Image (tube, rainbow, N blue to C red; front, side, top):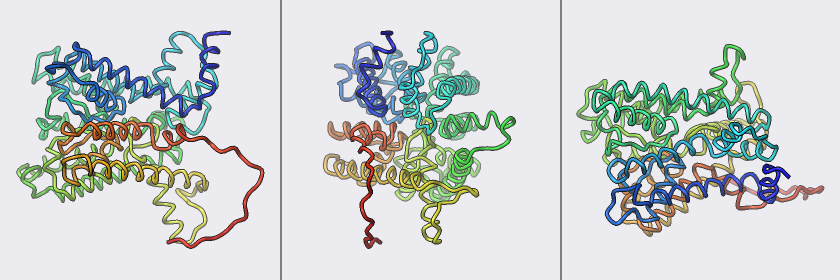
Length: 448
């Protein structure tokens, strides 16, 4: 029996969803162990394991919520550990595993392809290995270009060696929608910097639309058309960015703690940046804790929607949101089918979208309820923290370092669930019912 067959036989009793959940869990534990080593941090007495576990989960879940200051409290070694966890979380564990399998010339079996499909949130089994190659190529090209552009700015502020490191770190963190920074105050020192704002924003947007969409855009000259998935992602993403920019601009225009004292052009730039960031990553150019309550609530809606399927972001995803909206429209207008761009979606797609949104709200509501009991913070701060964790966004009003032991564990679990998706967690924990050859009689109940 070959090594591959032996390994597969040992995991044959696990479903692909269970392999993915366990795999990410192991990576987080290993990362936490590395971060708790004296070589990884500068904290007196060392970094306790719960804080190391929280940081490792946040990095792997490409979130950015931190109980320690990455720039001040972590050494270069610790920062590199965080960066590796971000890259693994952004690319996907199975993408990294497949990359090494390809390097070693090992055959990718059917079971591994199923696990890759689960990890990347794909619906078709064919072309998984080819997709992994495209993901790796696109990731490193985009991150490389982003690093060069950021270096052009950073080299004016710091020595060349440090500028190269900062450029690479923030390019990877942005494309993977992680939100970790090395400045200590996020990007609040770059509120007026057009280059940094636009480069980080573009990296967030590209990382948030998903690798399938990136591939279709790249090959559009050959294919001449987009799939319905790509069309929906691009339309919903553009709509949300424009809407978020306008709403945040209006809400914060006269708030002198955030936008009020800025020139008009900088207000627009800051509104655009904070309109992009809440759906995907926790970068901010203005103090989040000083935003108005209704701005924070609007951002929660953006964080709940999140990025797109197969991307480096979290949330229920843009297409799920789109299906829910179109499903509601079809029901209100009396149509039996959900129709989008002269095409019809299957009832199972609509059901999946509903279940994902329901599970997400149950998870978020449960977490908020417990945190209201355990944490010494205002309800709006707790709600914002929880939505940020689920959406793997990483924005915070500043309460993250003050979380209790229970609060840290709960937020860490919420980040983990947000990264893998509530449906994946539910399928990994539960057991699928076997298909039966009979159906029960139909009965109607009153709803609404």
